[in-house]
Image 1: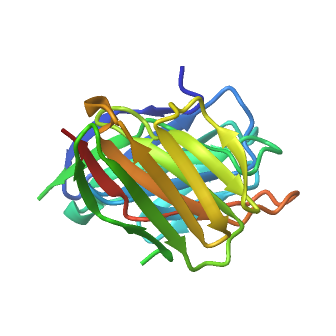
Image 2: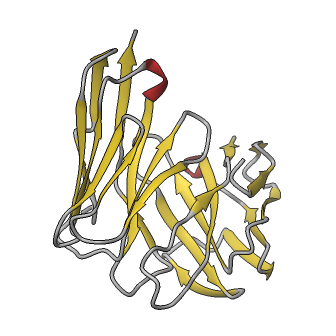
Amino acid sequence: TQLLEQSPQFLSIQEGENLTVYCNSSSVFSSLQWYRQEPGEGPVLLVTVVTGGEVKKLKRLTFQFGDARKDSSLHITAAQPGDTGLYLCAGPLLYNFNKFYFGSGTKLNVKP
Amino acid sequence: ETGVTQTPRHLVMGMTNKKSLKCEQHLGHNAMYWYKQSAKKPLELMFVYSLEERVENNSVPSRFSPECPNSSHLFLHLHTLQPEDSALYLCASSQDQSGQMNTEAFFGQGTRLTVV
């Protein structure tokens, strides 16, 4: 069983649409990171959320950390083809800072 | 450019070969990781080194042998691999700060390994 469950697994949308990706766990995390990965490349860090209830914005991307630090969401407004990729959430469990657990990822395809 | 460099980017090896993957980080971090990413599977943590000591070995077969000679370099030595070991091998680093909640991992571009 995955410690971090991501949904949906696949998402194919038209340019300009909005979408939300979810990352859920029954465990408490010290922090959660969101990464974007393109085929054949390593994941690239987008953001880190640390405080329960925290909301961070990165241009058209909005990241939220759940109050209990067990879940997170990524919302993309007006998606563009450049947003296409595999979105991964990850993080270390509380007080276990050097072991990062990864979700299985959400594969996003934004069609022009 | 994430500050973590992996070589080679691509590697094809036979099942009787011995090869090594190299990772170098220029971020001044004190923890380094090897991950395996297979098709249709989530990233699997293989090894963790913190302050050059191995702190995690996630039930990885002995045909994979990590080495961390200093805090900037990490190797993964490979021998007698199987075709199912073909995958993208990713190295990452982080600054392990006990008590700090915002530890972040930075990844290299990976080595695409094919075992034939």
